[in-house]
Length: 559
Ligand code: ARG
Image (cartoon, rainbow, N blue to C red; front, side, top):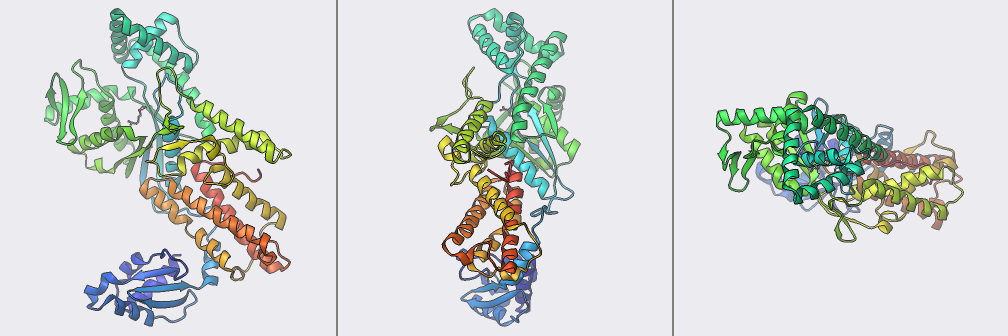
């Protein structure tokens, strides 16, 4: 696309417009039948001392056929451009290979992404899907855009809950599964509620853990190890792979040190027996030490943020966390700024909405809640039933069912803007004909099928792809790199998932047109035309494959 924009910018320059400004102003108009690209001329009226309509005419008058632009026309204050379709198609398809959409945009910059980050000794529940899947997609798109990415799983492995847990472990024994930990924790909390002595013991245990007591540490180490092992099974299933596993506990000492430092330099002060950083009227005071001397989630986050800056010198740090923590992160970033860290503005909270099942929140009820693993299992079970009905003869049914069920769950998370709530309905997310993961997989598999049937790709003449429906598809394909860049810029994987859905639909209508009109089929008698159309189908296949992989969805070749 760049060379076409460049050609328009050159015309604009001949009419006296600043070339860089012109390049940036070229855009695709909404109504595509009028123009492929368009240049609005309002903004130069003052600089050039001319009416925008006149400027548009001057730009159009500078046009001479150049093999890239087919026509340039002034329409009011706009310069409407039609591209040379043959040239564009050739460039667009030549650009597609297994690295399509990759860019150098982020080269030299590091992005830290804090995602997943569950609390240990509790099972992963359904809502934990979101941070994990959104975070992984953000890692993937940033890597594709050339950034160095450090994905961190920041475990919640410290807090008052551990005191109670240890009371339970001492009473009922060491658990061997995360579910057991959870049960023991729930029983112990109830026990502590009714029993003041037990509550004191829980406080003492929490303190012993902070002080490094051997028994407390042993219980903690077991809980952490076992939890991670169970988390990893689910993460692996979802294609989630962190680069680093950190946890709150490792920032205990650094957190205490931060408090002392801030007190000494006067950034923090005492308030009601605790220590706070006063932020603003809106953001209020940020508590960093409780009145019993204990540190907090926020204290550890301050220390961790600093440590990450030191370790990675990040250009961007993303916290992929529930929208419920929005106020907290606003406070955290303001506190970092108040501590004098100019890099505080490189931190961003990537917030996501809740998971609603039949309209109500699938949330952590103590001791209950739907586990993420059980949701994935159910997805696979349902996918298996669909495949059994639609294509019982297919080879590798079990693997396909697993892919399809998982794709359904992942896409229902990534298919819409992250801040929206997920309205989870099994029947919707497993449809093979809507905005779903299985639909995209199906379209990808059907492109693979056409290529198998047509004998694969050979050298072809792109200028033969002259039909209107082909042009639409080619234009769409050319937008993929931009969708990846926008996903990085806005921290919004749905830019890619929306693109894929639009591409898939466009391709379906291209493909089905052939069943109404034989001359529009991909596999036609004319060998040259057939080769060109197969080339186009392969471009679609390749683009879908890359896009799906970026989202963490398995691009099946048959289903
Ligand atoms: N463990 C926290 C929770 O479950 C999320 C941690 C997010 N990351 C962070 N650095 N605060 O709510």
